[in-house]
Image 1 (cartoon, helix red, strand yellow):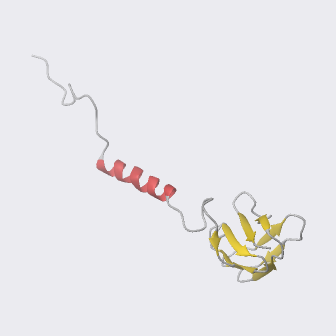
Image 2: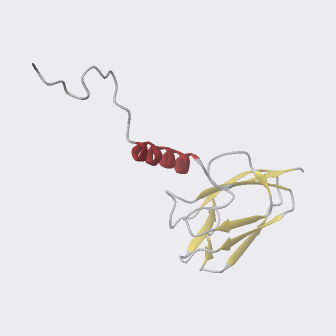
Length: 127
C-alpha cells in the first residue's frame, strides 16, 4: 500500500494566517494617506505644513484672491517653496514663509531640493 501525502487531493493551499495579515497590513498602509497625500480635492486653508516626511500637507489647497498662504517647516531638514518664475523661499527647520496671491489661477510649486517627493498646488479663486 502506498502512503498518501497529507495535501493529496487538495485543490488549493491557503496562505498562512500571519502572511495574510502582513499582506492586509501593507495594503492598508499603502492605500491610506493623510490629508496631504495624494491628489484629492484641494483643502480650503491658508496653512501648509512640511511634516517629517518630505511632503507638503495638504498637497493641494484653495484660497480666495488676496489670501496669504503660510508654509511651516516642521521637518528636521531644510526645504524650500518654489513657484515658477520666482526665487525659492528657503525654509530652515522651524521656519515659515508666506506668499500673497493677488490673481486667480492654479499655482503649482515644489521643493527644488526634493522635487521627486515634494510638490503642491495653490488654487486661487475669485477676481
